[in-house]
Length: 95
Image (cartoon, rainbow, N blue to C red):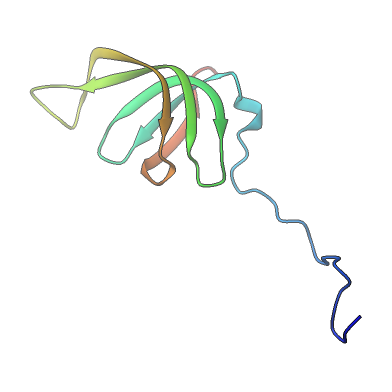
């Protein structure tokens, strides 16, 4: 073994995940995106970049008269992948 080699072992603390959504898996969540879009769905998976997989996704559409306000109109999207860099907030629907 050469000098300075750790023999394949890594020392130091294990990295902790900043984003831990494990307790919300298979639970309904609400996601807000840059640009004002908003969806609700059942969280099926995620990664460290905050990419989300939602099932039974429903998007709340913006008000046609005021794009900064959401209307009561929705559209069903079904199974969807939400890109992490566009996600502004993630919240549980209940509780």
